[in-house]
Length: 195
Image (cartoon, rainbow, N blue to C red; front, side):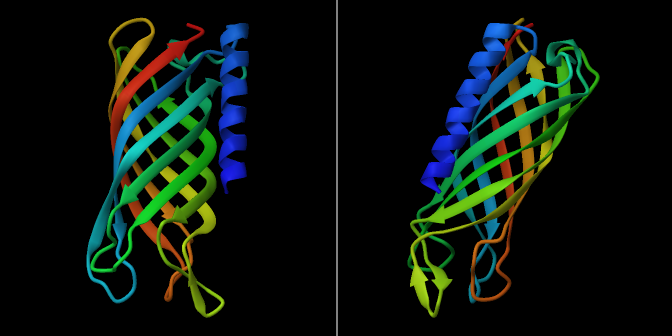
């Protein structure tokens, strides 16, 4: 999983560098604080919360400029959230997700609204996951990130992401269904380039 995360960050950096140099494909990078609500493990009731940070980048596709109200872009999102305890269980959870896919914007001026559907991987660590009749401290799985948000421009190069809300589905192993439903909410600042 660490190799995958390092590869994703390297690809993201290369893409940002290429986009910034070419100035042909406008893009943006967002850094945000995030909180996540997840379903509790089997035998526990209710939900538990995680908190952390996320970063995403998006590039307009086929010469369609994000800054000019583009309807479509390619996005990459990476997030890390942590909980010191999972319900009443004697362990916590660090959840790392790296996803990519299409992002769509509604036309707008200073206020932009977007939606996205991203696919990728999730990695749970610092926890307990069933594996071959024993418990292991980490596991990886498929991840689906579907959601959207709203941003308000505060200048030519910056905007504030007022709210981003995503449904994040993961399939980490547990003793019942082997899937998790997560609601992630965040806010942060976005840097725009190539405008």
